[in-house]
Image (cartoon, rainbow, N blue to C red; front, side, top):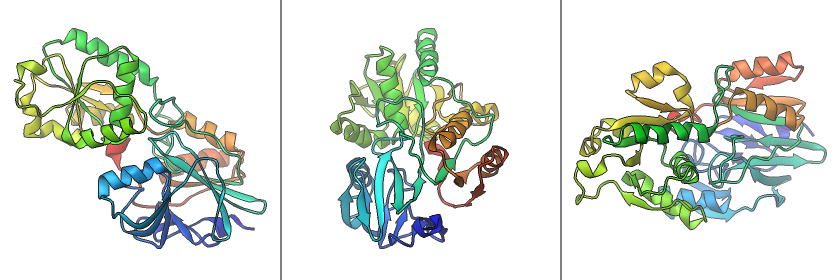
Length: 337
């Protein structure tokens, strides 16, 4: 059995000739296996969608109940037959419900990682390395310059800023799915117990996380018309990065602009975005974690789907691991990093 019979790149993304399904397809297909709920991986319009129950709930919250003609909730670690292939979902540690998809037949096993991170995150199941013949990995932060600090230490910088600037609203730009909930949980773990105010784009997904057992503590809408600008002094407000320049942000007391993203490692990007306090908090693996993960899988070959592909391919080859870039398009939403 060749790996390409289990998964291979095509016009719509990764396709399994043996299983008759796509993984995270970029266009509507008869059968889609979805790794996680971010919009660059989970699109509506497929005939059938197989994903974890959490990912299906996220897709329904974002696209409505009719996002696919049929759905099937898949549990972690339970192999199932899809066409002629055996498929298993394994935690990816990216966001709630995120999964790697293991595809195998006979003595050949291919793992499609989707997006993944290795840092601990109490809002989702942690990444589990799977031994395989071919590992298909992302490379969003696949350059040696990207080495993420400890997320709890970054939150400590935010706590310090609140003490230093009690007269200012701390306005955090964070993607509404995954990053917002992780930042909230990190704040709670650091002992911050005051209400956290949310942009409307984040409220629904925070409620969904709480319905799945992720405790987020007291939350409140940032659009409460009963509160004046002065009432938000010293408070934390979380919204999408694009809300910085909205009229929405003008309701707050001298907002201190913060961004929580792996891209905040790049100082120029923070400066261009008007970010005063860049927090390097990412839901993707950094360079060292990507390299460590490849070694832990014991893969005899590595395919790189999207991101900084060439550098990771070069590292693999230097370390005696055959590798190639797949140049898949449509899978990198920088807001989500």
